[in-house]
Length: 178
Figure 1: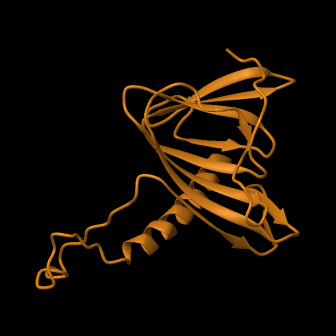
Figure 2 (figure 1 turned 45 degrees about the horizontal axis):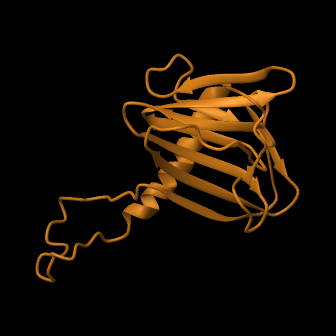
């Protein structure tokens, strides 16, 4: 039930971003004024490979007992991100200032987390994976992502509690995971 609520919240946020993006008129250098907008029955949406939309979010309190409770007493940034990453070596170790909800739409992404209690734990996310397509990164959690082949991964992320105008993440020391 908890995972389903997260998926719905992230899907709603991403859908809003994509709907806003779809209202822009798509043009091409080869397109002339006569053909621009000639067919109302054909809608072409162009989603850039990678994007980040980050904006201030006023203090809030969400309490849906049994499902979700989130609170912010300060104004912070909220971000929606789309990443398309080719398979390759692991990413760098880092943390985030707040929770991240992620969906792996395409490909396979291995998230390796480190904690003193559990050590290094790797989980693979993506369509058809045992762990599913969605994951959560908690605030301050040391982790890294590795895109596993053979295809690029496409992810959508919602990030909360980012300091106003601040970075989405902070580099962390390598905890020695192999």
